[in-house]
Structure formats: structure tokens, C-alpha cells
Length: 284
Image (cartoon, rainbow, N blue to C red; front, side, top):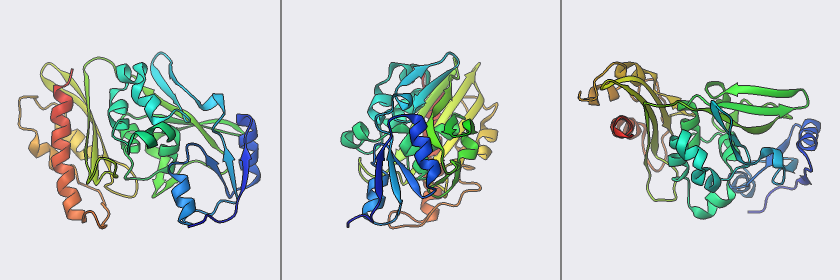
């Protein structure tokens, strides 16, 4: 289909992008376009204006900032996946990013664009939620920090306000003793996750000291599996952890579509959480 008519502006600076967005509440940011363009073609989105931020250096790169890693909103999936900083300090992000779509999409799609799109079937939202990342947004009023737990509001809806641009995401370096794994079940290598599990596990003296688990496609937003996290705390790595992982679907509202019914997704959440925990607990 042909998209509805819209104006196009290529921003020359972050300030200009903010100004253009503030002047028109129906304007949308155009980054890599891998999420937005299909919506435009299907006329599921009707922006009056597209503000292209693709050439703004303020939004690019992966940066080591001491106690955290800052990933610019315009960093591509491929750049994030190959980053030495990300692989060393936030390996869960690198693992999940490597499963996003295919190489063509990973070279064009952006880290920030995927997150701001807020698709609960996307791989990255659950990862950033599990790692307790912080989103940094810029508007005419200055910078605003949004914890990941508050960023994903509803299906395809973020906490970004009209006139705000996502600058990047801060991801804490969790340090020694943590293991990570992203487990994903999908029909084909390029398709969305039917269910995905992002797991981070801190080990101490043969036991699980802390676990953080984010679920993909188990509701209108990514879900934190708090019941499993509580059940796993203090458990020995030599224990059978399957019973604790039975709580993975607690409090979720998985969708029903052509690919899976809610009951099947709940079953997958339990199975994949167990697998992810075992991998994370056993990783170096």
C-alpha cells in the first residue's frame, strides 16, 4: 500500500529535531525505519510529519561510562551486537540483539528505534527491563530519565512525551558473578519471538543470590517475572529449579494470534525460563 501523505524534515541537530517535534504533536521520529515504514505502508500510522534524526552524531555510538554502558539511540543492531564494550559488560544485550530479524535489518534498524516502538514481541524491551536500564530523553525542557519499568506503557506505547527524542539507554554494569542468557522460541530465524526470556543470574557460593527475568510477548508490554525471581533467590545451583520456574507465567496476559494461543505461550514461558536460568547460572 501507499502511505498517507506526510511532510519530511531532516534535522540538522538534536535541538532542531526537538523543535520540529514540539511544533507538531502528530510528528514522528524516523531513525532506521525498520519498524515505522511497515506501519506507514499498511496505514497503521498517520504521522503528519517525519523528523529524520539519522545523521545526528549526538545519538550515535556505544560508550563506556564507568559504572554503566550508554548506547546511543541511533546505534544499529549490528553495531551493538559487535561492540566489545557491550559483549564485555552487557553480554545479554549482545546475545538478544544477534537474534533480531536478519543481517539486513540489523544493519539498518536502530537500538533506540526498536525500544521506542514498544512492540512486546521485540527482543530488546524485555532485556532492558531485566537489566533495569534507564532511558534518556531530550525535549525543549531539557533531559529526562525514565526507568525501564516505567517506559513501556502499553502495546506500541512508550512513556515518551510529545516533543521528546530518545537520546539513548544507560545499562548498568552488573559486575562479577553474573551470568546471562536470552532464550527465544520462534517459527523461523527472521520472525518475531512467540515467547522469549531474558535472564540474568548472580551466583554466590553455589547458590543463586539474585535473578532478573524479562519476558517477551507475554502481554501488551514486556513483563518482569518477579514471582520466579523470588522463588529462585537462595536456591542452590545443584537443585532442580524447574518448580521455581513454574511461576514464570504468573500475572501475565499473553496474546492469542495465528502463531500461538495464551495457554501455549504460558507453557513456553515456563519451559524457556527454566532453560534460560540453567544457561545463565552455568555461564562464566
